[in-house]
Length: 542
Image 1 (cartoon, one colour):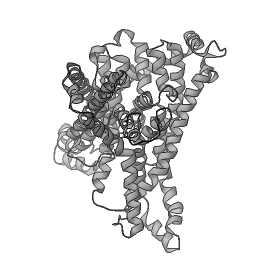
Image 2: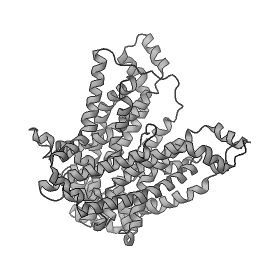
Image 3: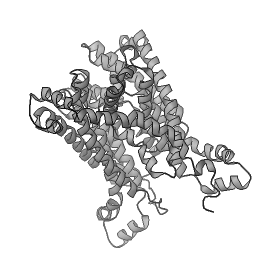
Image 4: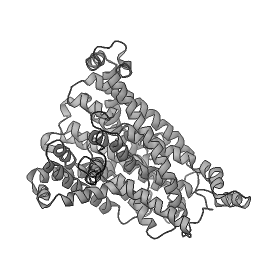
């Protein structure tokens, strides 16, 4: 009998899908449908007419007819495309070095590549300002001003997304067949020709998959664009926030949100198609890493490390350095009642959201183990940006927008896919014979699960919870839409200081950014450590 040895709990767990499906329906699907209804209603046209100066035509096409809104959409796509090109040019050589060479500290370097996933978006934006902003380290050494250029936003995008491509390309290069590469070299192919004829075709699907994610993250990014884009280079997500929060143009914001959803949805569809092509067994003839020898190989390693230092670690180091340079008086902001209250709110909201996200993620992963459609639904919260989620909730549940339960549920919505994805991967890697052995020794289905399956799932659960907690601690977009002034978190408090004039407020924001970064890292390490190297947390930092 097929699957006779599989515990009933794992063989037919579809009842576990009720909770995550209901949660997605209430917190994501219904708000998006409400957003669609708002965008297609007559109110959308009138709202857009106010923005576009009375341009005629269909409300659905108004964002492309109005020069200002068209620029926002086109620039959002352009900056995402530029970022894809930059991270591809920088990331592939770095990944090749990491995949082919063995050196002291390599394992710790791979773990350090997780920092951009863990560091909150607003903190990363502060790091870019501390490095390249008008009062940053670059300006202090006489560098040309960059605040009115797209350099700040593009650099911030590269900081967040270079590690996405590097880790994906590193994993792909480690799957290249050593036998095929050796055969090519034996037939006279140079290392460069062997790369283009053997390695490049093998890693291309992985690269395309990673680039889809990079485009998605950059196009739908909010916190980075809000702080670094300025008036001229803000993205469409920032424009939606401005229309809702400051101009009350819900119709115009709805149509823009629908176009954003259409573009991100198409990108996510391409990503899902590419990801299915990557579900291949691990190769047993991997290429063995070697210690660099010769000036050329050591120079390549030094270049790769320099790229990672410049684009992945420099903004974080700049925050710490600028905060230290601010002086002891700036650090007094940590003990102000406003800061302590924001810290309490951050811990309270994040803790509650983590509990809910863990429960939902476990149920989703267990139910979707043999249900591919349900497994794909776990990616829905990663496709829709936090701005669109918050905006949809604002339209659908106006009487609940200033309530703690809705805020925590929104946090959990953005965090629980990390738990579901990590646990699902852990279930895929479980040896089937262990369950059969436990059942043959007389263990009941529940006892086999708790004594055999559960201990093996704990590392994967810890990884998912770590990224979910880091996401909740640094959440920014949802908080701006749904919270009340007295519910300010550390991220919104940093944004408030950035909006106030004076160097003292900038220094206070830098100190708070250090505190938020330390809190996110501490939460991440507390949950995930000790454990194996974390998997690539696709989807973080929208």
